[in-house]
Image (cartoon, rainbow, N blue to C red; front, side, top):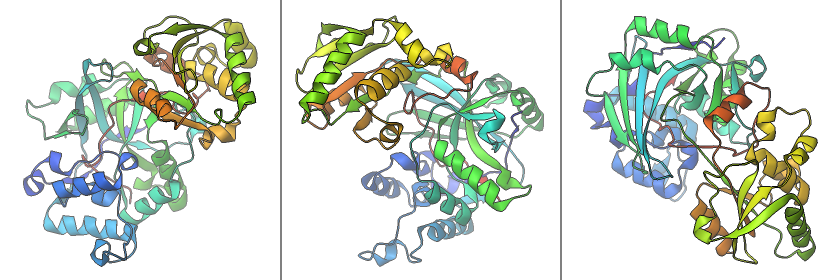
Length: 427
């Protein structure tokens, strides 16, 4: 059973810091040095200062006086509390969130979520599960930050098989508690829900839910490690999550495209791949602007673009039975998943890649847009681009009901959940 509860948040005093827009930040793992600096220029209280603390720079002694970025983050939190920029609630709340966004398909949507604390479970219980295999991540960095600060600073974005948003929406005021717009133009609005009756209803509704981690697998691994390190019962047994129902009308799943390298200088490998693709797939040349297979019916349909021909092709799997044979024993929903077909038949099969190659991205990269994928091939950075379709939410559900997890980067959930809305104490 999932244990989903309200939490007594540490959060900004918007009267002190000016606005939520000034202090919210993207997740730490998508921020580069230039963006970090831009966020701090927006406000010295921006969440990036504590969620992505800067290591000591000898050329700038004032950048981190302690020399320890994690201790500096903890000291900064305490300083902000002393200044009144951060306040610690005594009573628990649930934080309701809407995200109005323009998707990569050009259409506008509104996605809903609840910021809550969730009991940390081992994957084996089946309550909280990864929805796809993940690449190795910076576990120690996040663990050191949790140890030093005592807070979950950045929420894990998870999908719930039960939707509690309808229980919360009627209680929301006309005006939100805060509003922030991210760099992609997504408008995030946040409400603080303090009614214990609603809290209880949400906990009850989600007790039977399965929670699928959509973004933040490494943060969840950190939460498990911290729970085990501290031991016993206490707030360290919970972690901060943003939950969106799988039935939410604003939840869409976009594709992540695959790029391969290591073929240009190896004619034999290149020929083996080309011959193998012709054997497994029907290939049709299409205009470059029509390479995206989105909306195409069928099993195993991809766009293909390579550095040698500089032409676009549509690939269609000739015989799904070939996938069934190689993935014997796997659930049908998994065997019909484009990323699983591509990984099994092409990456591991024709390209000869190992699980280690895929996990470490050796000869493999990803792009979140078709234009970016094609540009990376045109620039000579990669030799081949495979353009994928998005995974239907129903297929995500079907795979979630099995013991299978998707290959890495099978999905792209957009938009991201920002950091800085509310922080969850873990001690």
